[in-house]
Image 1 (spheres, rainbow, N blue to C red):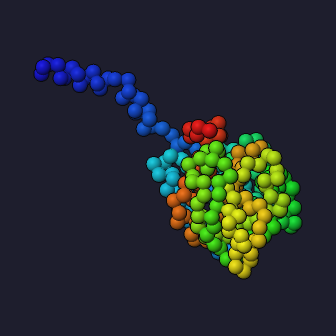
Image 2: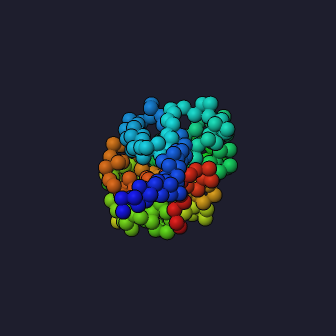
Image 3: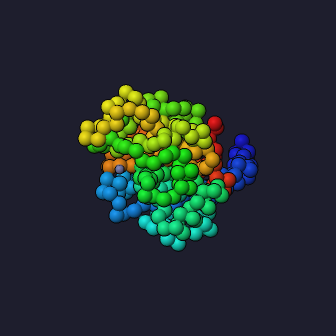
Length: 266
Ligand code: ZN
């Protein structure tokens, strides 16, 4: 028996799986993401942005992915953007013509975008028709005020972003935007989450009285998800909302052919 044990140990140490494990540990980061935020934005937006970066940073632990942060898109050409599987827009959007052009080309060529709150804000002064085509919605119409928790409903639980969420949950306090026309009117849009009609009249100073109120959606022509959350310092107090954010990030990134993130079963 004593002679057999060293032989067994020798045999185990040469099993093919030991090589496979070594490869596993040597994995490279699965993707790169660019976080864009504006430190001189409205204070409540900056509060959310800073907490979002802390939340996202924790998702990189173990160098699972690389997160670069910038407060300016100046110099981010198409070629430079292409190294990223996703641009995470925290209450920020391209402004200068060359920034807009590079972002347009990046998205038209398969780029990824996860936009929060004011990242999609646009009105008659925005003068960027492509942006509305990309978002799949009209312009900002109205909002609730002050920021308030809201009962929200999943419009579908077939999409990987919402599949693991409850059919309804209470989202932490935020300012929510209503759009006109609603993105639901666009056949290219899949609405994922809406404010429940049970909330109407929604707000105290500024009141949304009714109507269609989508807050999370994807334009199926692009690798993108828009999330209306993003105002104030309570965006990360709720595990369900954190799950929503993580699901949305995973879904956008996993559909990038160059990312090494497994695609969810859909
Ligand atoms: Zn806001």
